[in-house]
Amino acid sequence: MLTVNAIAAPSATEPLVRTTIERRDLGPRDILIEIRYAGICHSDIHTVRGEWGEVAYPLTVGHEIVGSVTEVGSEVSRHAVGDRVGVGCMVNSCRECPNCRAGQEQYCENGNTGTYASVDRDGTTTQGGYSTHVVVDEDFVLRVPEAIPYEAAAPLLCAGITTYSPLAHWNAGPGKKVAVVGMGGLGHMAVKIAVAMGAEVTVLSQTLGKKDDGLAFGAENYHATRDAATFEALKNTFDLIINTVSAPIDMAAYLGLLRLDGTLVSVGAPPEPLAVPVFALFGNRRSFAGSGIGSIGETQEMLDFCAERGIAPEVELITADQVNEAYERVLKSDVRYRFVIDIDSLR
Image 1 (cartoon, rainbow, N blue to C red):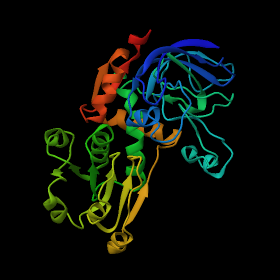
Image 2 (tube, rainbow, N blue to C red):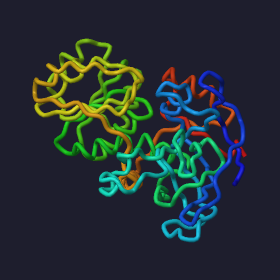
Image 3 (cartoon, rainbow, N blue to C red):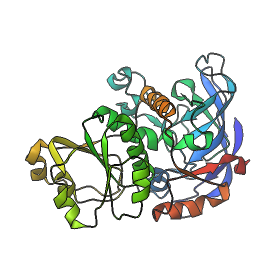
Image 4 (tube, rainbow, N blue to C red):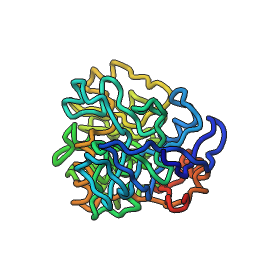
């Protein structure tokens, strides 16, 4: 076992602290990654604070991970020492169920193995990327193209793929009108990716405070949802709405923005249930859907897409000692647009 430096949550209510955790010995198909950067996702906060269910403490979170390969198992063929690589939200799956066999292992019928707070193959609890090293099966390790800035690459492994996957699945592109609800870590990536796909993009945010950013990222329109006139003016407008916020929204009002056969897809995950009035779906044959992360194949496709089109998240680099402050700022929406931990500060 390898003992490495890490940041962990001792409980649901205490601040995160520096500690050490153990990584398993390399198996034949495992890769040892020296982590360089780890993004902070709102999911990390939900998890460590017990908002999505009970977890085992102490817990190290973080599922937006980039680094370099430092050691490989005897049967590894996809990656070599020195490669720039990334790890996202999952590190294994059953590989046998219909979804896994179809290349959709993120929807593993037996539950994929999350990068943190899951039961690993050795029976231990997986620990995430707020640490100096991680050991991962080669099949769940991504290649990070050189064209993507190293320090900005980590959020693509969650925020990037979480928005890319529904945009690709629901065919965002030329001739499609796409609305993005929320302009945070997920939202700003949804805007950049949808624009690169060729869609006409509108941002729906509580205020106009980030309007200049949204337009700079390529959005053609930007509206404040606190203004009731917004919902009247935009009725029956959009083919696709990507809801990125992790808080309840007025589902009837947002569904009313969809044109015929339009779909509202939630990728944000509020702890509270969303109330969906069925009559709002009847009009225009509207649909409400959810979307998780993408498969490993689709995540690699997303990384290559972003590299080819010069897309990268907007990040604020922080040190390991600033994580607790960063959590509070995330909850106040005081970040443009993703905190990334410089893991060198943890060594």
